[in-house]
Length: 355
Image 1 (cartoon, rainbow, N blue to C red):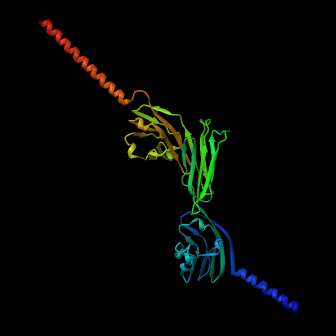
Image 2 (tube, one colour; image 1 turned 180 degrees about the vertical axis):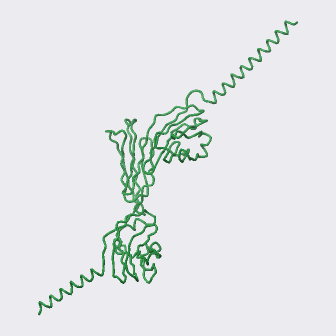
Image 3 (cartoon, rainbow, N blue to C red; image 1 turned 90 degrees about the vertical axis):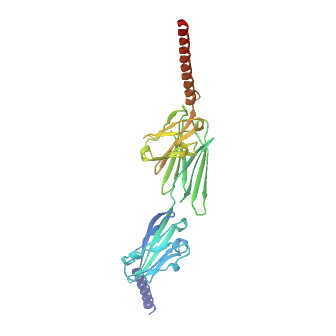
């Protein structure tokens, strides 16, 4: 008797387990990657009618994200962090779309989410793993007195920074790299590379990378160039220049021109000095004086790589254009004066002979 009751109890439990399994469907994880502060869709679907939708961030303690029932969104059921940022696609609910839209996603939104739907066909749960990426937008690269700095800001997840040289070198360079995390949980990374006296023939590259993207900057050191003051052309080294953004700078900070080789803008201060920009990116300057003596950098960049050609420029120590012009004026005056004096003396002699 007891044995039959025990068997009946086991059958009842098995029946309930099977029924529950048939009634509630659990789907595996779906990976979704979204960009920091942009809109992001977490996918979910259902079959049946009279749908009830509940979204939760499981990794944050089952935090309520958004609910939909009675044929409308229920924002009051959302946690404060998601209120006003989460919504369903109302025009697609009737077609089985239970996805939720998150606006302005943040690092705190990263984690595991659960989509629960209940319809006339039964209940269903699906899980989504959301990853947030703040890609590398810009790498700042600057030559200082005895070293080079490389830095970038507002990155997620934690980036990696590496230094390299071309050609490859067996020299050992000391560098200090620091990584800081902001209140928004984004990362700022900075590295300082100390140069030695034996690296004159080396070009240095700094690369910063995350799982989303990678950006690198290469510094090409070029020999100094002596110029005359009337007109001179400064070359730019990179080869793929026509398809890239181009910036010419003076002394690392002051922008001379910005754009492409076919469409660029010259800063107001340099309009009188910039004569032309060639298809190869070479910059032709005119009316140069000692004020334009310094370091010129040609920065060429595309989606992943930036190349900086660094060229020190020195005005010629000989005669300047202004001095040459002044000398020519004095020579012409002297010739005119000598010719006038000669004519005067000739006329004077002729007058004496007539007498």
